[in-house]
Image (cartoon, rainbow, N blue to C red; front, side, top):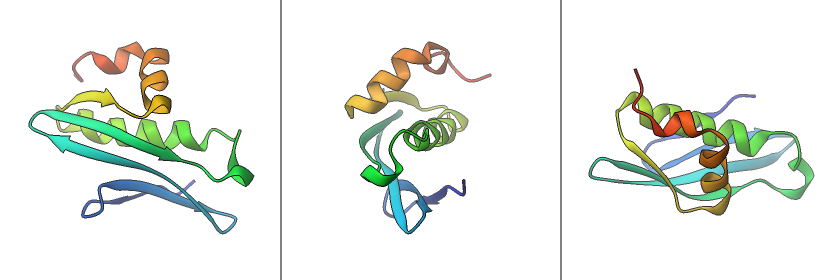
Length: 89
């Protein structure tokens, strides 16, 4: 899966079978917050949302930003991956 970061639009996306899945984020001082996750119905159940969220959070951690998940999917992802809430080494 090829995930692209669009800095100016504050999103990560991937195009699969002509459908675009994405996560949108907001950065405030010291914090990276995923505010929306969108995966079209034909792509659901393939782990695409998880890959997008992980890529976005990896980006944020590499910049030593605290992680938030205003989006319900991102919040649930963080609960399933509590190590992400610890500072990156």
